[in-house]
Structures are given as C-alpha cells and as structure tokens.
Length: 457
Image (cartoon, rainbow, N blue to C red):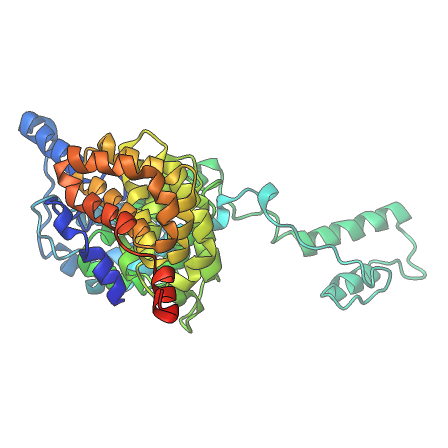
C-alpha cells in the first residue's frame, strides 16, 4: 500500500494542476467541463435557468414513514408522489447543503426503492427470451414419475370412464385429459395469466423503475450515503444485474446503475458477494467483474467511459486487485483502444484507469510498454494536448512508471527523441520527462549491477 501512495505522490511536483474532482458524473466531470459550465452560467441570464425548487429542511423527518409506505403500497398515486418527492430530495444544487436526504435517516427507503426495480425486472424480459424448463424424459411411460407429476398422473386416471357408465366417447375423454393437464401445469406459469399487466402497465412499471434508479444514483453522489450503499448487498446486486443485462435492459436504467457504482467504487469491496450477508440475486465476484467488462467493451461512449473510471478506482483497493488480475490483459487492451477515440472524455477516462493500473501491476507495465500503439497514443494525449492539464500530467506519469521498470528500457529507447522534444518544448512536463530520460540513459540495469556485484566486473 505504501508503494501505491508513493506512486501517486511521486509526480505531484511535475505540474501545478489541481487534483481531479472527487465526485461528479463519471464522464464529463473533468475540469474543462466544469470551467465550460461555469462560463455558460455566467453568460446565460438567470431567467433561462428555470425555477429553483425548495423543500423545507424538516420535510423528510415528518414524512419519512409515509414515503416508505407509499413506495411499498404499489398504488399508482402514492408511488408517483413518493418518487417525485424523493427526486427533489435527492437533487442537490451546487450551493445546497441539504442534509435530510441521508439514507440512514429514512429506514427501509433503499430496500423499498430496490423493490420497485426488482418488480420491473421480474417482468422486463419477454417470455421468448427466458430460459425454458428442462424436459423430463425419465419415467415418461410410467404413471408415477417421481418428478412432481404424481397429481397430474392420478388426475388423468380419475378421468377414465368407469364400467357401467359408458356415456362419453374416447375423443371427449382425451380432450378432458388435455384440459386438466393444461389447467394444472400451465395456469400459474403462463405469462398471459390472470394477473399480468398489459403494455400500458408494463410501461408504467418501467418508468417507476427508471425513476427509482435515478433516485439511487442521486443518493450515491452524497458522501453521507456512500458507506450505507457500498455495504448494502441487495443494492449492489441489483445494480450489477442491470449492468449485466445492458443489452436488453432500459438504457437510462443501465446508465443510472453504472453511474451509481462509479460513485461507490472507492468504498466498494467485491468480496461482499461472498460474505454471509443475505443474498437476493446470487451475484458472484466474477460475474460482477464480467458485467463491467461487458460495459467496457460497449460502443456507447457514456458506458465504456464510466466502466473505465470504475476499474481505475477499483484496482487501487488491495482487496479487489486479486479479483481483477485475471482480466488485466483485456482491460489494458480495451483502454488502449479507447485512447484512439477523438472524444476528450473517453481519453480522460482511459488515462485515469491506466494511471492506476500501471502503478499497482507490474505485468501491465511490461505489456503496455511493448504494445504497438500504447505509447504512441499516450504521447499523443500529451502533444495534442488534452484540454485538461491533469490528464496530460497523468499521461506523463504513465510513461514514467513504464520507464521505471528496467525490462522496458529497450522498448522505450525508440521514443528517446520524442521524449527529448517534449522536454525542451513543454515546460509543464519538463521535470517528468527529464526523469524519464534519466531512467532510460543513466540508470544501470539491475541485472548488470547484480552481475558486477557477484563476479567483480
């Protein structure tokens, strides 16, 4: 852990840029976007910003039980009122010091919101996409099969005509048998049963689930809610399941889910999925990482940017590192691909993840230095330059981490002229590239130094 802290503070003297913001949207949360937003606010008149909704500080304390009961009731009017109220409570303006939206102050609120999402997910997938039941063939010709069909078998026997009452034909008897089997075996399992919703009802359920996920996302931005949400297994399981099904799930629901875990990433321990805490969805550590890898490979910029930032924050935790190590080759290759995109926010997310990845994983340093495109694309971020100085500083620090490994000397010496050019042309990174050139040209190889010490060379 000391190495991680030293690696983070080693390049602090290389630039005067302010540290990145701790919180914010996973994409578009850079200093450039903040500066542009503040500039837009100063230019636009106040009349264009819309009304500012205010809620009394004691509102949630007086109505917390009513809010939870309204969410649990399932009634349309009560549910709509509760979701609208929580949306306002969970939204914090820039100068708003609202403290009454803390999840710890409203018992049962998070579970009630998660239940709304679970109710939608229970009916989200159509019948054609669900996994069907396995056909039982063992004992198909016997009356008692042993697989729970005894009552059906006995019921079909009861339908056989008794001697002396022969008033029905064989066709009528077979029709009655089929009808009875249909009623007993498929009535409650059929999607088109008595209590299922129509299209309008499904749309309302979906809107409620999206609203609930947006409230949970808003709560995750508040520091006072981080610990409670990061240690809530049901919350994490629901969020990761939405991410896992991002191909068929509602896009806004998936976006809210990925933003939620990005905010919780610094406090998230993946071992919670194997803890004795009660489980609702049976998500494992491997499935959680695979869900994030699926988002990282997505073509949606918002999703792969958020996934890159999440992995960059997760790898710093020593408890999560063993769970992420099997996926490191896939991670760094995808991050190098993201660097080729022209979007500045995508480059910032990839640089941030690589910065933490090369700091804690030696294998990633070796493979990244020998990659055909990695060093070129990292240097391009510095030479372009990226509009956020902090991203350029981290890119230079990545090169310095690669140069600190003696095995990368041969690969990086091919860029010696480029390093020297940046050293003399860009004063912001001159100290960093001076150290890089010193590592490559002046520092002896550890293997050669060891040989000299043993054999007296």
